[in-house]
Image (cartoon, rainbow, N blue to C red; front, side, top):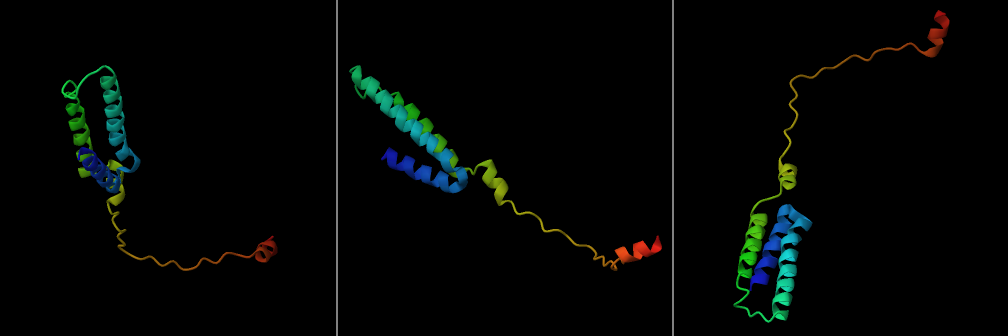
Length: 108
């Protein structure tokens, strides 16, 4: 049940803008769970002996909940609308006549 909740939170965090960073907590929790279970199992520890690992799961859930509820700073900056430029007056300039090359030569 916990893994399904972690995957749901990871998908929500991905959609909120965290993208690849949202996979880090899930990957770390799965990796640590495997390593702790492997080492504890090879030493003959029971599930009751490794009950302290619940703290690691709670920390992982807290990180995923925060990521799912708060958008990253870069996503917040992209969503802020830019104000439209305000035009206060219009200036129309008359076209400037420039002398052609043949007129310049005639002057010399």
